[in-house]
Length: 122
Image 1 (tube, rainbow, N blue to C red):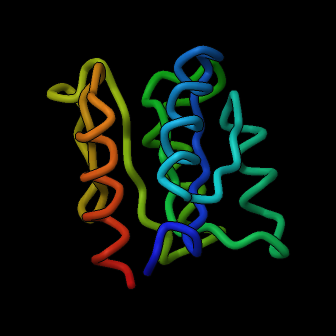
Image 2 (image 1 turned 60 degrees about the horizontal axis):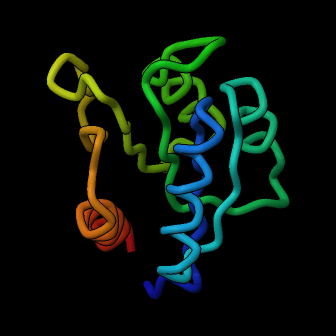
């Protein structure tokens, strides 16, 4: 599946980090939605008019852990792949079938990780 047809929801409470991730993904021609917290991410995921191919979330969100967000997201969208971004990647117990990328990551690492995940799905 080409980037132009893939949609990613980025959940990150740090505005600057979120903006950088969104900019990189948009430059790679993905359609990107963003949320600053789990509540707003779940609201977007509940909107059945929107299609999402990947949920990329920070582990440390202000209103719940990224792992908890992922589990709630999968209730709404059972086939949705999840990518955790964390400065403590080695300390996350990533649920089976989910992915993790350690912060800080390079543009190339992010591109390669997202492409690899989306290629497994499509």
